[in-house]
Length: 123
Image (tube, rainbow, N blue to C red):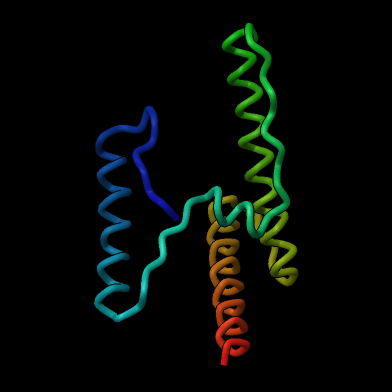
């Protein structure tokens, strides 16, 4: 998934996240595996049921805006968990990080399968 600096994150945690990401990129590159970086918006649009972004009227107090945005973020995470459990019914996926990883892998697999169908139809 596309990696970027997180707002309000410490420099040490941002560095650690970047280092870990670079480690895996280097490992897969050395093994000859292609790397595709995808934005959360792209895989979520393709594989999950869209969670409508709330419309926040002008003049809404900042505390209420934060609450609304937090609720939306939780709804997106719950949708990711629901999708992962639907894709893999034999497992009980409860963590949104695991659900995101499963959904990204499923998204990439579907893209690979679709590319295979396109290549077969063009020959």
